[in-house]
Length: 277
Image (cartoon, rainbow, N blue to C red; front, side, top):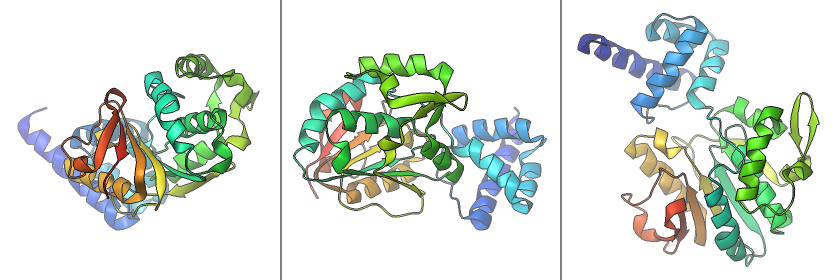
């Protein structure tokens, strides 16, 4: 792409994001340009638009087109027990401390289609903590939240899910937690009896208070540094003293303004504990 064309595309992208913010109050202006361009390019192909300007016109005039675009901008497909070493560390080094609180509040930010949520619920169930837990499951994408609440995953994904589960220290068979129906694996409703699903935008909304654990994995990598700072500030405001912050394998608090408020619990798996308020 020539320099002049590249500048036009960047301008179109900025105008699209401004239009979305003004029209629908979703704020993607703090997301990294490279990831947004990849997602918007895929949207152009699927929605039959030759340019971002054409897409912007349709998005601003038709809420249904915006709803379709939102799926490209936000949904990140994950796996149950993705990064098994992280889940093993959470089981071995974090849940014993969580068990010292009489009740628990946990926040899964950027829940997408629910893989992280169901992994956490299964782990808490096996460690005897789920019944006294309240889990906030949030995402900017309402459609993704509805998918997460249904808890239905394609059958061909179950083999990988099960391998991850055992590597993560699972104590039962993953099949104990789902039944085959509707052409997929439907996870038990008991896992989400203590879950509150809520629309939440890390770019504009406030935090949930007095939580013992915040999980926001593989979300910050799509944010610009200022938006990363805002999100980390929300998480810090949410966590009680001694609470845990869990990030993705390519994310860190090391160079953030909140870094001194935490100690590293499992550095290689990005698990931190809040030691200052």
